Length: 77
Length: 169
Image (cartoon, rainbow over all chains, first blue to last red; front, side, top):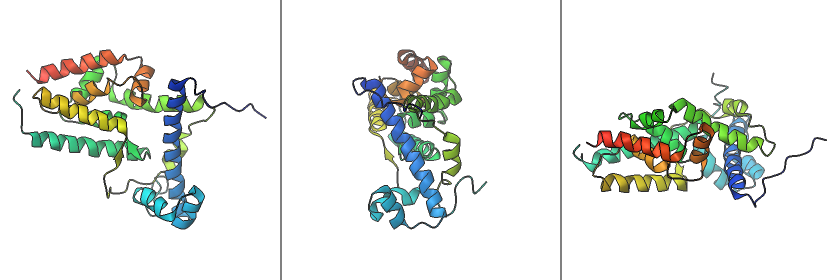
């Protein structure tokens, strides 16, 4: 098995915090893209919320205004 | 130049916020930050933000790329391939905004400082003010993007000041 990369050492806050920002950004992007695909595939907000570990209300509030109905950029090209 | 009515600055600020939201939404981010405000400032009609960056040898496209590059590099350092192409292709089409997007703390600070500085200098709100204030930040995505480009923040601040002085004569 390949050696896994370590998370940055918190003793080096500049590198560690830069990684946190970039991971958060990547997580936001991945979440939105995956939720769009889930909606396109007919998932309910309750199922999406369960998968994200939040309430349906919280998932809907945070994401519903940002996703379209059957409209990933790839699908609409 | 004489101070125009503050309502014009309010319009400019609204234009900036809307454009910054769009910049963040385009790449699937939930909040807009200082780097998105700078990208928004590039499109203001006064052109001073673009000219300030060009004075340090950077065009808007290069700055946009540097933002992505520094995020990609931070992820690679912990063994994650960014795979931006696949995510970009799966993001939703941009829906019509129904409510204002949240702004990151960094961009809130920049906005407040810019408003204060514009008022103090009895100027109009120009894009170079965003650049000038954003260049103060020692850390954060904007600072790291500038590092990626080999641009010193002080040089960018000086370039922004030259542009503002030219506009405020």
